[in-house]
Amino acid sequence: MLMVFTDARFRSLWREMRIRVSTGHYPLLPSRGPTPTFPVMTFQSEPALDLLRRAATPYGFVASVQDISNYQRIWTRDGVITGLAALLSGEEDLLEATEATLRTLFGAQHAVGFFASNVDPRTGQASYGGNCGRVDNVSWAIIGLLQFAHCTGTTALATAFRPQVERGLTVLDAWEFNGKHLVYVPQSGDWADEYVQHGYVLYDQLLRVWALELAGHYYQRPEWLAKAATIRRVLERNYWNDDTATESTETAPLYAPNLVHQRRQAPRTFWLMGFNPARVYGQFDLAANALALLLNLGPATRQTTLVTYLQTQWQQRPFLFPAFAPALTPADGLMAELTDNYAYEFRNHPHEFHNGGLWPVWNGWLAAALHQLQPELAAHLRTSLHAANQLNPQSNDWGFYENFHGLTHAPIGVPYCTWSAAGQLFAEAYAAGQRLWVPSPLAD
Image 1 (tube, rainbow, N blue to C red):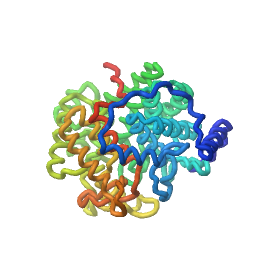
Image 2 (image 1 turned 180 degrees about the vertical axis):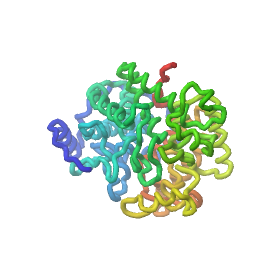
Image 3 (image 1 turned 60 degrees about the vertical axis):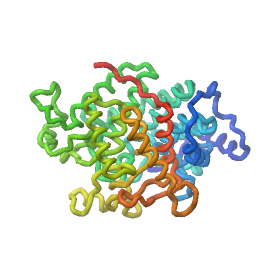
Image 4 (image 1 turned 135 degrees about the vertical axis):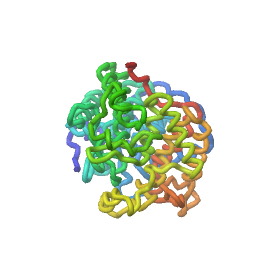
């Protein structure tokens, strides 16, 4: 779905941004006061920071500096994640690009409340998704806005876009469909848009919790904090397959009766990827489990079990963790759902792309989370991120490829991806003691 902006204020902003391109003058962004002081990152950060500088435009961060397909657009997910890494860097020019990213994305929000998949700065057109819109973009946009306000100490953007935040949280309420606190995600409805998952996907629920907690604290809305606390309880009850948790011993029932028999064969050493009326997914979801650690989901015993699982996997394959594991093969029934789920060419061969490919962005989030629990494993992962991001068969420059083959580690996809650099910067920043804002959840 494409939309051309007609809002007079946004079109005016667009014209002023174009003036900035031609004159090199950047008067548009309001003063934020003193730039926060951050610890200096290691020399390994410089190639990643340099890529972010090259990707910074007056409209925000593009997904890649390589002019491939639609990667030179401002993407909600990629742009916000890159902006979060920029906030941790403390570089003034990168903070400006983060602000420009947020202005572009919030200016393109649909009247109903959902956010664009991407915005083309050359035409002013916004795409809200091809086969399906992106559920996670709503939460990412809100997270980015309020992290920006918190890290820079300025209120202008968060105040101006408060109505958009309210609309975004309202549309997430509507996407529950049944009022039972979990958003239903259609297939192709989040970052892994050519993978199999659909239904109550944990990754999307966790992003919503983070957005609600940030918004609840920042705007002093206790009802949002209460909603986040309720969702946390639902997640803890339904997404960890605990042998000791039965319908007779738990205070709360499972989300749906079918989970009683569907969870019997589900994994018990990590947070479940998700479920729908037909199945509980058995694959390990890297992004979801990284967020679960980062947001302190569940009791310490579960975090310890998850970290133990990660250590075991690392000992078997010490490089990067796959986005989803194990990889699906033609022998798996779910492989049939991958076969035709692509826009231009099939990319989900076993151990590639979403199907077991290795993504620096999500490994960076995991490394950041592990610095709070297992710094030794986090350091190993950070070293692997450096090695992976350096790989480049076309040049001596750091490649920052989108993903890598799960077995051979060969680079796959688009090079010079900003969120691959961002993943490395998260790992570096957390190693240096920096942290994004994760508010304390509302006590039960």
